[in-house]
Image 1 (cartoon, rainbow, N blue to C red):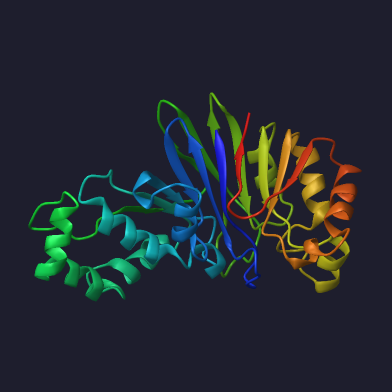
Image 2 (cartoon, rainbow, N blue to C red):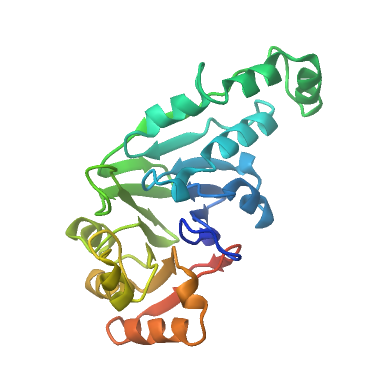
Length: 286
């Protein structure tokens, strides 16, 4: 079980991080969680082709979690030569509507894919990649989901629970992956809440957003929508997880001593392993 960190930042671009996206490599399959800025390019940087990803799960639809979605869809479709599995996409509403607006028959990117289907040069490129004519239009299995069991196969099971972020304007989900290799929860952007704590109970790993030190978070008045350092610590302790992985971090943790202070504050509450992740990092999880 390998966690590839594509996006580990916030909505504000920084030199070394921007937006959120993770890929879980599990039993030979690749599961993507969120598709923030430049995720398609970052996939290739960590050695994964877009055509290798067969599952995409959205926690919510803030742009720092979904803005690269049309790029990923088009790139995967264009380079698949009709030989990949149909991509399965899951997320809270409005995932289906959002996808149709982007890639549907009259979607924003329909002139692109229609030209690639019809133009002789694009047809030639498609055939050289191993495809055949007539070329199929983009097709994806997209589902609006809520809490509960989402997907199960022989190797793993995925369960979702509602998170606490910016409701009712956007719905947010956390996801838990259980397998023989271990269990990992992608909490996304959430404030401490019972539903996510129940989902993450006794998991091996909790991946959660942590943009600021707790005092700064409360000073900004954001403690009702996302976790700070102490919020993540209490959630990890209460859930009894073995490892805590902090993403969605900002430049505040790049200043001298800031990351060390955060780890020290968290360690006073939570006794497990603590990781601040950087983009393009790949972690082997056991």
